Length: 216
Image 1 (cartoon, one colour):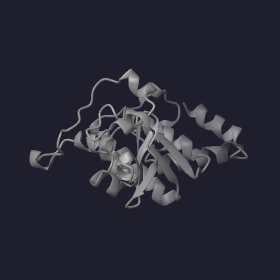
Image 2 (cartoon, helix red, strand yellow):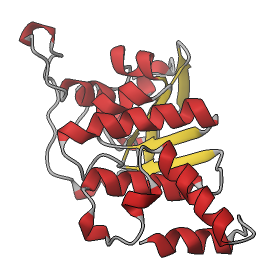
Image 3 (tube, rainbow, N blue to C red):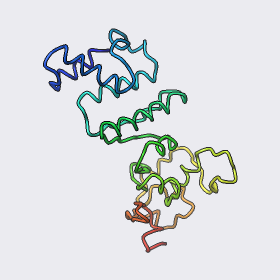
Image 4 (cartoon, helix red, strand yellow):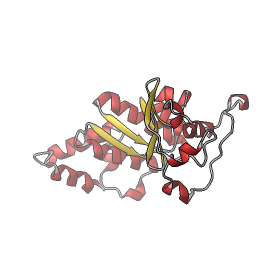
């Protein structure tokens, strides 16, 4: 597994010799809580899921990137390891001054790790803005539905279940208007035929006819 690190260093000409390459690898492994000794000479099957995620992040750090794209970084690890990886991403963001594009279906970890968030439905951003505003005071019906899906200890604090998720509908991909119109409790005929504009509401971008001033 160590050869992938050396190949990256060689391809990007990151070190002048083997000693310098090992030093660079050791530095990046240390940044994610691992050491060269416990990593070198082992096969992927000898590492836990959490260690493999950390090793992948360490390899990405070799080039000192300004942007790290983390696509479902906690989907393959159990709950006990999720927060350790999310905390690692926050630490790297602060220590390396690096931006992290965190792609996930897990709203809880997205809320914890993000400054800003974009909610997507059928390939379209339907709401985007500061994470606190978007998730704590959602404007779009789909965002409210996602917010409702997060379990809460007090049922009195849960959102009104006006919308329910169903199997993926083929017509949503073909619909000319708002892709969410078939599930939205506020949808009108206009929503089914016209694509809504992007509107800013309290510093939050919302793709919804409801906020355009031309509704219904």
